[in-house]
Amino acid sequence: MKKHLLGTILQILLTVFTFFIIYLPIIIILLISFHDSQYNYNDFGFTFRWYGEILNDRPLMDAIFVTLQIAILSTMISTVFGTLFAIGIHSLRKKSRLKVMVLNNVPVVNPDIVTGIMLFMIFRFIRISFGFPTMLLAHIFFSIPFVILSVLPKLKSLDPNLFDAALDLGATKLKAILYVIVPSIKIGMLAGALIAFTMSIDDFIISYFMKQGEFHNVSTLIYSRLGKRQISPSVFAYNSVVVVLTVGIMITFNRMNRINKKVKGERL
Amino acid sequence: MKSIYKLVLPYLFWLFLLIVIPSIFIILATISTFHIFNDYDFRLTLDSLRFLQDSIFLNAFRNSIKYAGITTLICFVIGYPVAYYFARSESKNKTLYVALLIVPIWSNMIVRIIAWENIFKPVSIINLFNLSFDLIGRDSAIIIAMVSMYLPFMIFPIYAVLDKMDDALVEASRDLGASASQTFFKVTLPLSLGGIVSGVIMTLLPAMTAFALPERLGGGTIILLGNLIEKEIFRGSFNIAATVSFVVMIVMLGLFMLIIRFDKEGETLL
Image 1 (cartoon, each protein chain N blue to C red):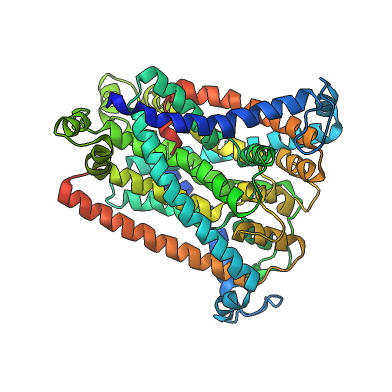
Image 2 (cartoon, chains in turn red, green; image 1 turned 120 degrees about the vertical axis):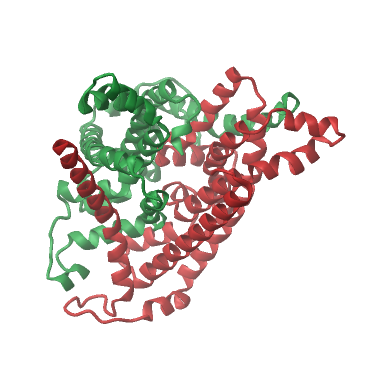
């Protein structure tokens, strides 16, 4: 029993350490975003100035706009197509389903830099103009596998006769998908969309290979400024806003899910 | 639902176009003069492969193995007990604690790297607490920052398998007379192998190919495979970049085979 206690204490210590080491940079980011000087670190001076400064930083505002546009578009497109593909994959026989899933999981496991190079080559080869179109396509590319991975388990827990029943009752295939399947898997779709969105607003490496001239998303803009040593704390302020917003969205999503669970006894 | 398999066809085309064809490009560029930007005479050549004997490559490869290996090991040693602790926890807020591990990932990766850079340089915000480090360019700076970046990716898949595991198995093992440590090594650990493999891959591969992190925290002198690929492709050395990517792909494929053995449909990848 004593050994057991020791193990538990060790586990708790490691858990505390884990939270410490992954939250330390977040705390530093928050501190810098509220500290009034970029050069003087003798005393802390509280300010909201950097948060206001975000609005005056034209390139940063442009990059934020690009990031949001790409994130919203790629999330919508990859959720719709990912769900349709998942429905298709689900209807396959086990053997071919496993084959498709191997291919599907390549972008998930592939290091971002290799995915970046691969997309860079194919887009150059088929001569798509770099910048917005390639960045959007790239984000759709890395998002779809995650949507499929979150939708498939939901499809598996569906009654296999549901779809056929809808067809027997006279629904077209499209209607059966829209009115019978989609409502039963919407939690999986929402989870997939959430993953897609958060990955898109954070992506650096893949976007870096899609860049063109002064076209930037937030990550590539910050990276390009690093080289020129012009990082203003407004970047940290922007990042803090994003973290707070995503936490808010996550809590709302969690609440919704809990209410859903209560109403329908559904599991996420 | 057999009649809707056709929905997969466009996806297969998409994957073929964006995965299979570029992979062929990478292989071609490694073993021939194949080029996508310039005109070239196609002939097979081992010129690019010879780069694999170059000290620049060998050094980057060694660094990648070293930093990614140490990081993965530390992440596993810390991550497994943490995942175990969360999975065993009876707390109502269990999912909340796990969700708290995700929050830092939502913060922009580059900004987090700059935050670590701030922590490790002598004059920075942490002077406010009378602390000052001078670790930029040291191994410890890179490894600590990598552990901070990738630790959650080790914990999630292990947590996922441990959480799904049937407690009755552990109880049965104890009832049949196994000690706590025997139960752990003979029952719990083997059953969580799938999660461990996913966790190791999700930590090892990104760490091996990171380029912004070693660039900022290595003080510009420590080169990993990621830095090499990035530098060569933007310098126009297409074939060299492809060759290095090819090496990374081989490592990835090896690890991917492992994943397929344990987890056919990639359920632990989420």
